[in-house]
Length: 462
Image (cartoon, rainbow, N blue to C red):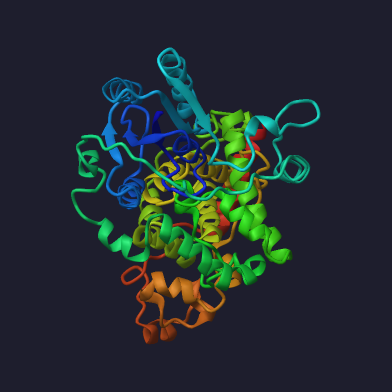
């Protein structure tokens, strides 16, 4: 039997349920389709996708066929040309994917066997519901009462024992035009290795060096206590089932349970997106429709470029520029600064992250920005405003992270690193810091901006 397997966000051979099942019943035509009409990729994601597809193609002996266009048309042509009898894929969960897959299935069902499989989430969103059959809106009961009391995640599959691949003519990877004309990506990619083998290597390193310190260390950006697997997970170079299975088999303690709950947050983000598909574009809590967000601000460019005058914020935004990644604790700090100190709409921040993060993920990005803004499900209270000075002092106490990305302050003593404006003139001179010249003055007054945020919140309530 000839089966066309449509790769999507599952760019791996192991624990790929759709591919595994296709290989069991005969020869396989492996394809990837870039659909410019529905699939909007940020610049950083395009770069990762290029290299991930390249790695996958090498694993398939160069027989991954890539196409650009409407998936239904591409698949139909291939079905006819190569006498395909079945079409398999692993389902997606973004709103456009759900509607697209439904339409393709309706159309192709008349011609070939069509089957979708599950390889992207641990629990299907429609299976985890409250007693009244409505979806959860708070993480803790969703995870503890819903997920952990549901059927456990399936065991991961190996790679297909045999892959009889059908070679086809196609334009090649460069036809997708994923790489930028100005090659800024070369510097970013110095920090990453991409593909299934690299994902597993990174996972093994985390198990050996990071998991033991995860619970307490994950909030400290200078420590090597987080997995940095998020881009690999997003593109499916490693599966959540593989990660869950391995971590769950470790000695159970507060580190393993804390890490598994973070996988739970990923599930919760997709759960929310599935049940509330306007999550990326509308306030989850409609009362925030009346909040006086700003869509334009002279301070926005300072935030984007890491020149706000607040060192921990600038360090995070520069880390993003230089590496395509930002530590999660720092993401919360820079997001809070944008939406609460600058009162800029969370969608502006979401769009910036979507374009610049290598792990840009519609579900996680939307849920996280709304969480920080206070408008989301199970959100942080609006009055919880991260203070960038105390956050820096608490979570980067020796300044290793901040000095790495804000080197113009590297000679400042720890005492003044996160508030250089408080440093005596003699200390600034000794450190080679000239505020307003070598490093920006703060673009806002923190106390005043906090008061304005509370006033805006009160205005919304009125």
